[in-house]
Amino acid sequence: MSQDRNLKWLNDRQVIYYRNPITDLPSESTDLYDYYAEGTFQCYNLFRSKAKITTYKSLKWHFLVLNYLNHDKFAFDSITHVFNFIADKENGFVTFFMKQKILDNMIKEVLGIGDTPPRNRIRKVIFKHGTGLTLSQKLSIVGKLIGKGKKVSEDDIYQCMLDLNHEKQKITISKLAKLLGCTTRTIHRNMGNQLKTEKELLNNEL
Image 1: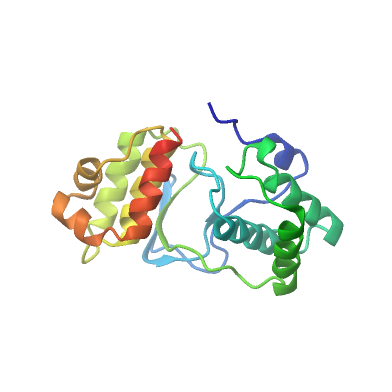
Image 2: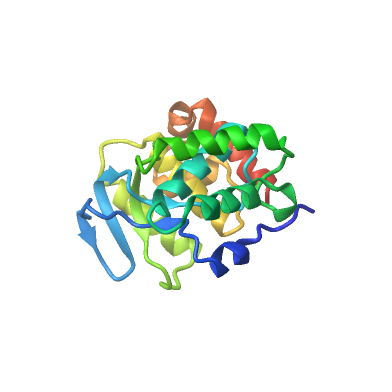
């Protein structure tokens, strides 16, 4: 069994790894969710799924997000300590061991970029904390809201994948099709190789 992520260590040090949009305004806002008809790139929510970091590329992206969200909060030595902690396999965030020299070079490159917003996936539905919604209720809302759009996109599929994984449900094509109100053929047609890989990673971590 893989080791759980030590999020307590991050929380104790008040490391920010989640942030809602700051300038994008929702098309619809309720007590349960914010809906962005055109989508927003400003929602950052690291460690939401159970899937761990499996590649150098993914690790670097996590560093970029953490550096961006905490740019004005931590000094150089402090954020470097955070990066080293996350890159240590024993702490449950990554699946691989990394040579210190390679890690140091990655950290140097990330810190050299500054507070530029990292490239992010678009999100359309952002649920508010503490709503008490079940998985079925969340996905029902997502399906109805996404149904207002013209077609199912990779980002819509990814949102449902994350919600299923967050509730420890295995992701299947038939489940995604049912939740999004479309055919399995539509899911296959709109699911690129990157999403297929992500689907396997998410399921493997259950």
